[in-house]
Length: 191
Image (cartoon, rainbow, N blue to C red; front, side, top):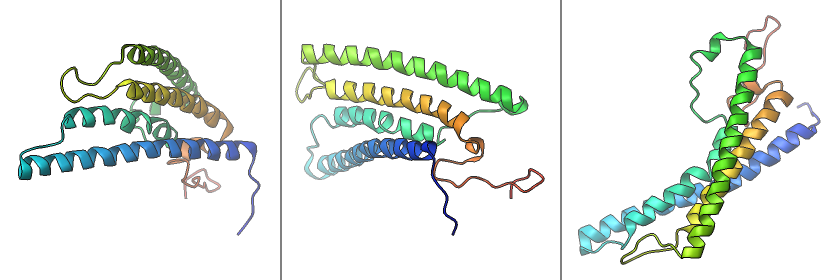
């Protein structure tokens, strides 16, 4: 086994991926919560003719952290679907520039959405807004805050994708950050 020194980029990339992975655990926990609420609600309706009050609202709002707490990790893990029908026909340099421009636009959009999300969170807190005006209701501001935090993390992941694209020579060849880089033979073909 050969030992190789890890540079600043590899250490930073590992730390960022670990942070985003830890945050994405919230998604998994909330997804389990959705499953438990749905399961118990169905059992309650079928067996006792009485389900969980507000189960639809609970499930609806739990989708926010499921999506937005994992989006940053999925982005850096190259897990998003990419439609590169036209991009594959462009030179590699042009593809790199277009990817960078796309990431910069994504950072701006995520920043704008997050800023407005935090403003909305403040309004929800000030108004004591609940999920339902009648019957069972819970405060919705935590979900707005999670959405906003998720958008900030997504913006950071797009920024790190730019750094990764230029700092990691094997960026294009990886399936994901955990995958080993594809080695090439001397003719330039993948082995």
